[in-house]
Length: 632
Image (cartoon, rainbow, N blue to C red):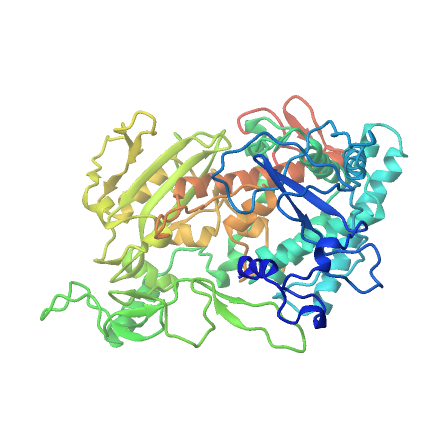
């Protein structure tokens, strides 16, 4: 279209001298004689010919624009700007060639003076780009397209976090007094605000569904933080910001208790909790009586084996030994349920919070479930009914059990026609963490669901497992991998029944052996053990609202030790928990508790004398078992 209009300039104007057009598209006689010295032109050279393209801009924007002169092809006009010479190019070239690139040396004009454009280019190159000043921010939560909570609520939490930052920063500033290398770790008022805003925005965007809980936990973390940990955090932040590259990820810091392994074991009785006071929370401290067991059996028979599904809460019948007509283990068809727990979206007092499922993020009540299982399942926690399947046993004396170690263990359970039963047990030494026991267990009843999502045990694991025989090693068999770069695979052995697995566990402990677990009532009840010396990390790190609420093991490891466990990278999310990993994690949490408690005692005046911890009064000393000293 533009080229067609340009061709009209070669045709005489039909109106002639009477043309009143503002800018006529046709040719006029005065176009050949009228000069326009005030207009700038830019010359582009192509081959041996050159043409001038007039600019439509004028130096005086207030005066009316005049028709622009188009020079004849054979006439070369002088220009206020110099023509930039360029090497000849082939005749076949694009209609609109790319802009010419100016070299570092300016081309002189006819008068010998440098071009204004060249001078401007030089000055622009000489001056470095001015740094854009950072925007001054106030302590007001940043605007988000989709906020996880009301702005007032976000601001309240933000201010509480900022107060913790100010407290820690003031302590650091007071200690350094503006001198020494640590003075560089002190933040200005604006930097404190930006740090708080960044932290709040991170939780609002990355942890949208759990914003309230996650951000409040972060605030609590900084409220409890001391100056030493603040220094470490600031130092890591400075290294990451000004270092040559990203700091290499360091492994979890080792827990230094200041005690020997024997002293750590001797310290554990101080952390013991009497389980008899917690029986209403599921801890069983006495073996159920035979009369109570008989009553439980009669109640099950009277109900016709009807149970309530542990997943979808529907009623169904269970058939121990399978139903005769079709071999079914349970009635009432498939089970549709949500495998995740219920969570609350952030809200405030004016707006009700929405309850959603973690597994699919659907609101509670929208659907019956997002997962379908073949059968319904059930479980129970009544001690007498548990004993009706396999009775409880007190830990028997065992003189062969080492006295210089504790045992940390974890159990995995699956659903059978008799409720939830033991299908795997793992035990490791404490504090060393060496593997002592890891076997699969054949349950008493027929298996309905192995609960693979959480137990990690698959049907093929039990079907292909090697049968354990007395005298065999009760640790996994290491099978070399086909790929030499991959670690060997662990192949677990299968024991015939839960009582056999319990006897293997009894071979490792005595009544005096400290036994460590997370949620110990579940593990002890699964093995049907009554043990007097139990350390439960649920009780050592209680939930802020108390029992029956409890902190999960994964949460405690991340908060207390900055370590991630139970990480599932598989697509189907069916990898399950590693019971050995969970057992060691519970043991590490106990070591951390020992460290903290011993630090408190040291500040109170306790001392180690000849491998014996002595209080200031020397009246409540505890000593290493087997060594001379006072017992706690």
